[in-house]
Amino acid sequence: MQKIYTLSPEDYQRLLPYVRIAEKRDTIYKKTWEPRRGPEAVDVNAADSAAWEQLPGIGPGFARRIVRFRERLGGFYYPEQVKETYGLPDSVFNKIQPFLRMGSISLRKIDLNQTDEKSLAQHPYINTKLAVQIIRYRSVHGPFRALEELKQLPLVDDIIYRKLENYITIN
Image (cartoon, rainbow, N blue to C red; front, side, top):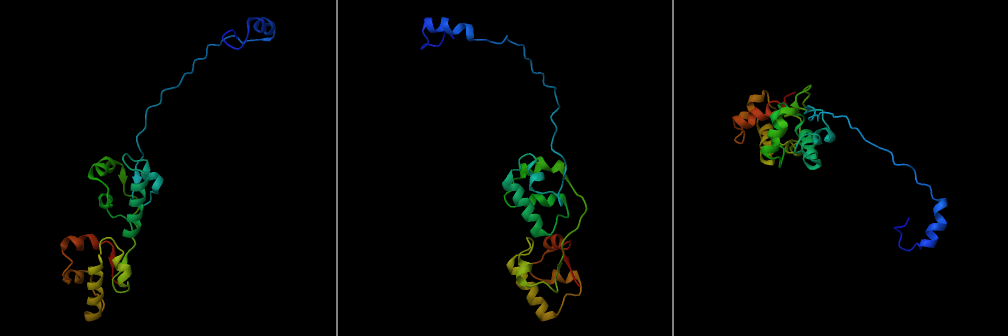
């Protein structure tokens, strides 16, 4: 109390009998050591944004993009498809790849004979030009009878077909 500059020595002597200061205790906080746990494995078809954010290098923006890409795609067939998410750097994908797991695969398939042009064009592997070609092929040749007929379109090469074959069906 003597360090209070506005308190005169007479006031200090007058207040001293009323002041009680507790004895100093030795307080030692002991924290038990816990090993740092790495991120948990993520099921690429079931994980929500919060689960994606637990992975190294994935923030809220990338988590939203991955989930949105998965929804537009209809589900992931391979964990490596996460790499195709717009803007996701290869370095970040390489960090998260060991934590990616495939749970149950339930892909949303597109019926080539029933789906309209706009819905086809919304699929990440089908651009607008390819959607127009599919619709034109159907109008000229009738409904698709086999998935392999898709290879007859000029814009469908073997790479595009391999990507699409898991997401298309013919009923």
